[in-house]
Image 1 (cartoon, rainbow, N blue to C red):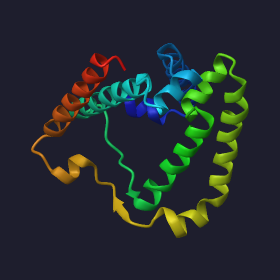
Image 2 (cartoon, helix red, strand yellow; image 1 turned 90 degrees about the vertical axis):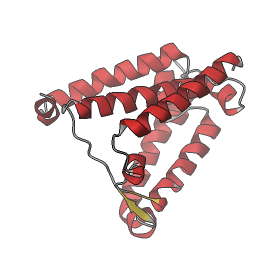
Image 3 (cartoon, rainbow, N blue to C red; image 1 turned 135 degrees about the horizontal axis):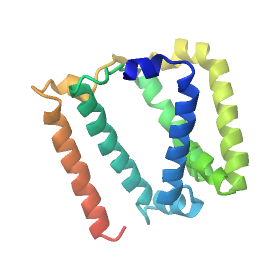
Length: 186
């Protein structure tokens, strides 16, 4: 069933719009589209953003591997490299720190009327995406493929008898961290 949905060119834009709207709505309801909340996260005063990210990591990890175990999905891992894994987060972090929004929260903030997110965020996202697309051949040749480590995941590296032997402790550690944050009032 999922293969048929994924293969349907007509359903993809609709599903993208629906899931994008839901994602933005949930970001908005969680409060992480507010500049003040994001800046308080960056100042280590409010960990709402981190809590939402970790909750999403747990949900995604358990959901994907449960669907994989049921035979509903197949993983399509993408190869990685140091050249792609180091500069990207640095650029993301600089933009996040300067503007106070990440791409998802910038678009969500536009939804509640934040002009700074529209001008700095959405225009910045579009400009950055265009520059990256234009520079991609040069970047791939000189930077992105440096230090290639293939498509291995932590589960591939550890080679447990079951994926759940990595997932369960990871989820437990994240939940413990969330509990500590919540108990500390952050």
